[in-house]
Image (tube, rainbow over all chains, first blue to last red; front, side, top):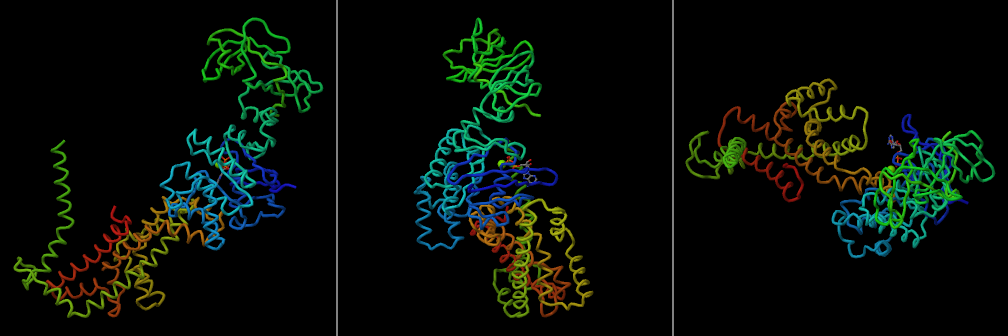
Length: 357
Length: 260
Ligand SMILES: Nc1ncnc2c1ncn2[C@@H]1O[C@H](COP(=O)(O)OP(=O)(O)O)[C@@H](O)[C@H]1O
Ligand SMILES: [Mg+2]
């Protein structure tokens, strides 16, 4: 039985639909990442769960109870905002105590809970300061402490790392994950950053245009994108659009721009339908000379070589103008821009998925 | 460069003289022992200030003025707070028109407002009273309070109210625990400026006071119609000092910006 259940919720702004008939179940104690490009409706979904947006249709159930019409202050849902939204006139301690004050808890209990929350986010010692006297990372920790201090039934985080610099982002990412594990809270983490979602999620829900297009573990979403949108959005992959010419059992062959590409498939495909071959760039490689058995090989010309430290990224183009990339370990990457080479991948590394209509 | 700077400083001094000069002249007049007014400086004295004490009508009028200033500013500040909140929270239909209407007393001559209010009161057969005077002053000073409140709200993050509500505060408590304290400096500044504007207002009060509710500027004006003497200079100096003390005091000691 799902702990949080979004049952076909829809939210419109005027004629624009921000969330379209969206259903999602969250299991107690898990961290679910809601991943999608900017503007796809993530914040709107989160605000509907928190009670700030009234959905036009559908229902939201939390712990088996319909909360669709319950105001935000009665939902017991902790929120961490993108800009932290700390109360500027209150000290760190008073910020964290705010929710407990509203609940009229006894002073001693408030003091103990605040101290514990601050310790959990490793912020003991700055309780007396004002938010503006803290660094961005510290403010983020206060926001987290404030949300968990009320022992919420659900923790919602809306792109909490997007205002931090890259290094701090990785630290805070691990911190948030640790705090969520230690408290056992059920959490929804919203992000438009796929690496963040892949690293943090127990399960991830990929969103596009107000809908959820795939929900699964990060590894399975990464390896088996169910939709061309996800294939393009998660990981770096060569995407080749074409038409199915053969399909049988778990394999298919498509024709695209003069190329014939074989691979495995999970969905049923029929001959003639549009489809897409998905090959991760790190499973693609360049080589000279002849092709290898069990590999698909495409003659290409290297158009760009980008050194990335441990890896080199090659951008290539074949005679009919299909663009393909390969990401190779620097040690094996002795190819130059302008060179004519073969780009190849193992047939089992190619996934064929249904195209967009 | 240097010459340009010198020119700039010279200009600043001229402006200051122009702004503060007349007030300084009145201050000097108020401690001049010469009995005719105005006249060259003879000797410093406080006798005009002592003479003020014998005119009870000035004290009564001053008390009226203070009461009216405090009450009308309280009303104006409350309206400015609620109005500013509603106008700033999200795009309101006709929001711009509404705020312009609320700011309009700023650019309608006070005499016109006074006359208009007098006529309306006549139409609805309401007699002039302390209450009508206070309400009229509240309308007149609303723009001062509203402008400061709107500028306060322009820096206010309404997301804080969502944060407060997610933590268990209902809308009213969120307002009291978050909006009010954060807007406090703007409200105090707006209140102070409103009170000063009400306290020194003459044109509006002329139309709307009765002998019982006469304000200080009205009484002074009536007195000056029969004669002008240094006692008025002493009174004017006191009024200026009180108004300046209120404004500067709030600005400096409460560190609430009114003066820039
Ligand atoms: N208050 C609003 N009024 C009108 N349109 C809105 C409002 N909030 C969001 N939208 C629209 O709804 C869509 C989804 O927005 P949002 O949920 O903020 O996306 P995300 O958080 O994924 O970037 C966007 O197209 C946005 O322009
Ligand atoms: Mg968003």
